[in-house]
Length: 276
Image (tube, rainbow, N blue to C red; front, side):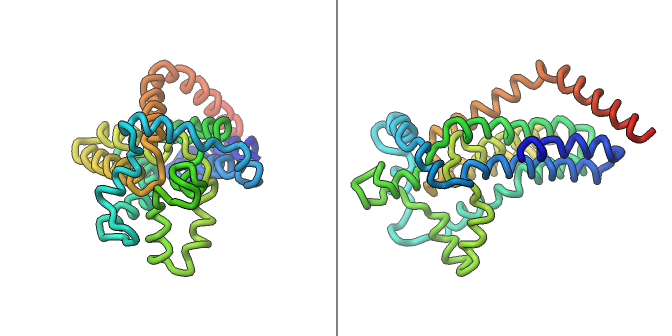
């Protein structure tokens, strides 16, 4: 399934001449390939739960937090027990808006800075695709899951609340469960945090597009980074590994540019033959 989905963007490039419509369709097909591969480990939830790593992230985070998990520390400082405040709702919505932000960055560059589209799309979707390696090789539980299974406190003691779900149930009502099933996909894919990694890449790319765009990008990435830890969605170490992924891709981009150019020329040659 992954192989069939992965060749679809290439097939589209061969079958259709270059246009904005094709660029948009190619990005959609790329994300379809990502989505089916991201969700696939959860096709057998019981097998995934037997493989999942629960303990190493909180042990690292306890060191990073000087003996207290950053999730726990932030929720103690800012959260009201049993309540979702307006500030919490803003942070939850910043998390939900992530589904639009990386792709919105690519769409903005396509419309306003088309000469930067190829670089923006390549770097953005490289973060998505390379992050999948971690999800398949080392399936890792987020803090809310570890807390639910008694790893962060005594059995049955929820040390880290999952505030997004609390607000989601209150806001969406009966629509929350089907919505979560569609968007959740794979709840045991936390390392690295692609939420943060892709938003960080978007901030870099928006900075290249202009100072105002960069300010928007960095404001969102910073807000989301705080929200992910505070809401119990990710450990701090998940964000740090996501940062390393993004910065590694940016550092490798100049060295990989000749390879990407050769691949591009090969696809263009096939396109010319198909159109002849």
